[in-house]
Image 1: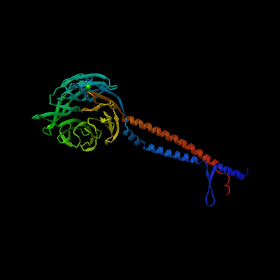
Image 2 (image 1 turned 120 degrees about the horizontal axis):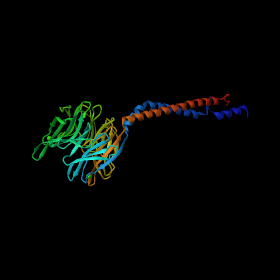
Image 3 (image 1 turned 180 degrees about the horizontal axis):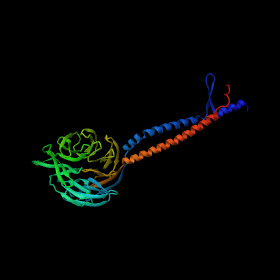
Image 4 (image 1 turned 135 degrees about the horizontal axis):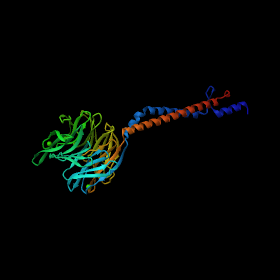
Length: 448
Ligand SMILES: [Ca+2]
Ligand SMILES: [Ca+2]
């Protein structure tokens, strides 16, 4: 083979060439595939570095928007063949205490169940035909239960009755909350009769918890011959003010008071009348759920956001920067218990179906949920054909610590991936350099 032919053969194997209109020839290394890989790795590295920079924000948003929620267990309690429902849950140590009704015919009376948090198994029952009770708080290893006649029943945590504070008020305590040595109780009472019509007004009480002595009362009757009712009470931990939510003839109202029950302001809204739960975040914003709504108010009482829903009864709890609302939704010929998760702007982040019964009408009546920092305990009822029964859920909620661990792991993975790709990149760059040297033509290109 001649030198010219050998040179052309070498060029054809190692080089591509192009010719311009002046007849000049440009040779290009044939291993251009290496350049593509080089570009790809470079882009991957830039992408990974950008992801690493943006990751803290990205993960926090992702974790907040997709919180991990898991139903640990569901218990159905059906004490009689009649219609009965559960109201509030309180928790302490290894146990939860569920305040609810059991029935004899059309008469309801109180039933308190003590259950294990771990699996929901029944430990003890306390029942009495003398009361119906709605709400509870646990303070200093004592369970305070309130309801009919504004009576207060105090139990130890083995569910033995210690004290029975009889009041005989013609009304009902709907909600109670503990704050700094005092128990605040809100509800309604009959304040008079107009012929056959009864008139009702608000009653709010402040009790010193150790001695169980009444410190202050707040009673109002905003509308004559009208059922004015206070339905739920909470204490704003930022402003240290008592918020009582209820209604009068003009509809929804919140009475904001100081800790000694002196009225500061009345907040009005076009929300539906029935409210069930109130809770506050660390900035003093209030979240209220009620008949077909969830609403946010700032600490001054200004309405910030309202969401309308199709549900009625509900439970609301603020935890780990999120608002959890237990309620019900119609799902193929049934009403099932549902847990909605909202961010602080009440944007819905998730919805989990809790109930599993078909042909059942699930609901919540007045009462509240309990949260022990890890699990949410929530109780309502299922109206099954011909028979109602309690339904109690334990639901695990992702904590902020879990999110932090997840974030650290993601950062480690990204750093390792970036380092690996960088090594591949350096190795490939060196190899590419060698190839370029190797394929450099040693003789001038042939004339055309
Ligand atoms: Ca039943
Ligand atoms: Ca009235």
